[in-house]
Image 1 (cartoon, helix red, strand yellow):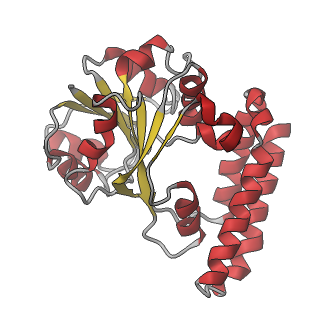
Image 2 (cartoon, rainbow, N blue to C red):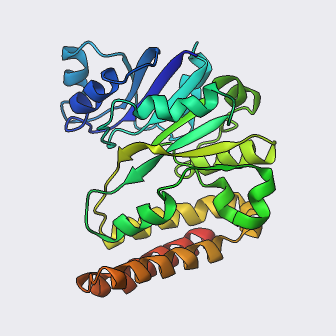
Length: 281
């Protein structure tokens, strides 16, 4: 099957060259094209794209949407499989893409996503562990009762989708989704009887060191997403957050990272309050 890679960019000068080289090193896969979508920036991203003769198109800040720019790119693609990535992932293995798309090629699933590992020793390290364990798994409609909201967990920081299924399900329904567009589509996949495979052997490094305000702002957006898509509430959004908080605290204590205990209550409060505020906005 032929693969297109789609990657939105913004202020990406520190990422683009290393990211592109890691994509070119992927083995045993026919990549049809790597398409970058650049939101107007004031750094040297476009200069780097031009210098390296990379395939890209630009959108204004007013045009950018996490959902719509991806959706338009898929609708224009001629490939069999679409791979979504973000600019800030680090790909160290040359079989990352092969491991990601193999389950789609062999019919195990219609969509897949990679394991993400944080390179920072912060609380995000534990959230990554919780959401991206060492063992692969396949999720389908029959798993909803057991998994609740986690049945629809999916990340387009590194994911692949069978293009004809994306088209059949009308992508993101042309909605402007500022966050959680990946969960929006994952819900449609699962509810319509398709399968998602989490590929623990397809590894990327994806690290952030967010301030408390940045965490609050992200969860406020997430809360707004759940307010606008309140059919998801019945799957236990609050319970999912509580389980994550318990896991993080357990891991902090196990690793004797007592310095993080000072950060922990404020980090969790930023998430909780942000989500609550977002649902009321």
